Amino acid sequence: MGIQQIVEQALEDGYLTPSMEAEVGRICDTAAELSVEEYMALDKLMGALLTGEVVAVPRKHFINVMEELVLSEAITRVAEIEQASHKSLDVGDIAAYALNRLPPLYATTEEGANYQRQRAKAELQNLIKQQVIEAISRYLDRPEFYPERQAIRKSEDSSVANQLSSLLKDYAPGYEQKTS
Picture (tube, rainbow, N blue to C red):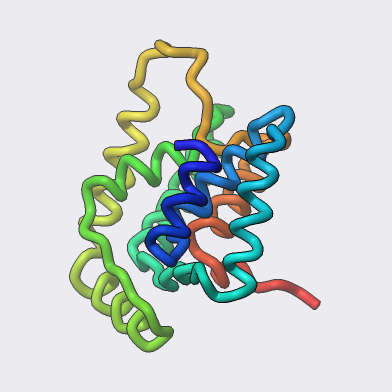
């Protein structure tokens, strides 16, 4: 769907969904140059947003506590392996594999997140460890096919510390405390 179609849909519906907004952003980011029609459509959308003719639907704010727990476990295990052997493991691949085999634990409040953390540590810690260990095993045993595959978001710096920092920022906001 192009920018003009998205704008027409937003004007017809009276709202701009997060996925519509993301698609417009993706088009703008990847296009070498936008056409005059696309600029006009964006201008029309901006005017409609400013007048209230179109309302931007807010993104829901929630977290999956399981992501924090899996990342924490994966980081610990990967660090142990990388220290003992000089192999480099991708924490994102390992976490994704484990998360696909574990139940999600969503929360919309800090209290809900704390409850989910406590519940998971009491009831699911062994399952989390088991799935992370399985993910690492699968990662180490995987064949080197599709070398051209690309990460969802490629980073300039591929050090483990920066991969972890990036993952934590994406999946567990507030996990890393900022120092002042």
